[in-house]
Image (cartoon, rainbow over all chains, first blue to last red):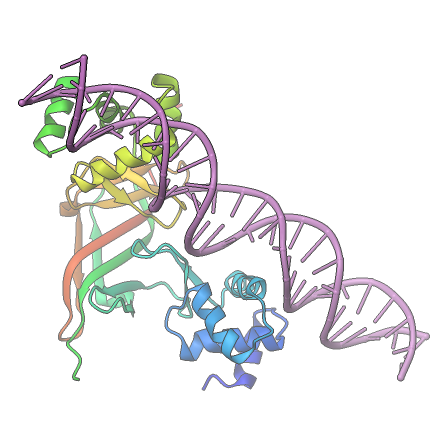
Length: 137
Length: 137
DNA sequence: ATCCATATTTAGAATAATTCTAAATATGGA
DNA sequence: TCCATATTTAGAATTATTCTAAATATGGAT
């Protein structure tokens, strides 16, 4: 699925030079990770690419966001940026028990603002908080 | 309206000792300010209570939030906490031109999440972004 | 292969918002 | 007045992130 080749191609298509570091980080965020923070990415690179610096983690994430391959999420429950490999518009569900963040297709949340005259809405961001289905042990 | 007396009473009712600093800051956030940050509060106290320290601004805001007299807002467009004197559940509209943040009564935004079985939604936070009515010059 | 311009990566310093700490000050009741 | 407690304070510490300037790597022209 998200093998080195296709990751590489996505980077190139987005105008990003596919260096080994960028491929590694993008691949991690795309497949293994789930809305990681920069320091989660760093913890992963520490295991897999011990020479890769923190600055490169931040630089790379910023490059990927700039290329619209990732999206930054700033959510109220956590004081750091999360990186979302889902770059289409969508909402989020935060499982308050586990802290897990789930992407929600905007089709699944009907939002109808009835604002006063003159207000134009360009974007709608919904954060749902609650509990996910109980997982079997 | 939000005179010293009624502010004082609100503080007491919430179990907060109404010191001069607390009255001043709460009054400012309730009437003059509009979703201020801690440093906006500090800028105001610098004018009006020059001896009041930054630590007190933070302490006081935290006390008021703890007493449910204010609410912390962490929104994605700004990297600092905003303080909202509207402590009931509500949504927000961000005017992308002016940066102004407007409280939106939840009655005015119909939200109908259709999530998979087992998901329980306890809270819904909506941020609308767009343009407000053009103001007359 | 070698050289070079450019891109990438790096370590560490800088920044910004906020919290913490421990001392100083104020307050109100006995 | 005295004292216990609450409040306020200055400044250090913390945390996430960005910046800076130097080091390194890369790929094409010779």
